[in-house]
Image (cartoon, rainbow, N blue to C red; front, side, top):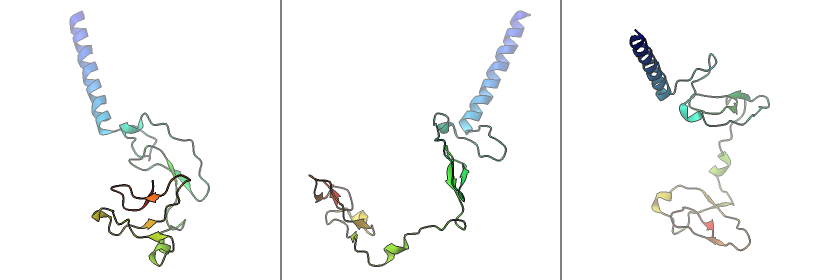
Amino acid sequence: AAVKILLILSLVASSSSGLLMDGEKQGIVSQQKGEPSLAPVCYEIQCADISCKAPLELRRSEGQCCPICWAPDHVIGLDRHTALGGENSYARDPHPAAPTSCAGVKCFSPHCMPGQSVGHVQGRCCASCT
């Protein structure tokens, strides 16, 4: 009789641990109602304790480990960098040694630290400090 009880307990334990593993594989973690699921990759991440200034609100979306300060576009204007559409005195052409895949990039003049000079790093599109 004791052997049957041990056998039943071991079967119950192994089946319940299988259920937990399936849930872990799918990234299912119980959150407060209405919050997105937390992925397993997020378990070991410690998020910063942030507070948001109005009109931003603390929000964590599906697939995010940590919350961010967020507001919809109609609440806060979005900078689409339209100023770069015309002539820009800071813009430069890609470096002559840049790869052909750099077509259409926007480069700027680098401001180098003392002891460095403007040059090119192989594989980069724009001039760099070397």
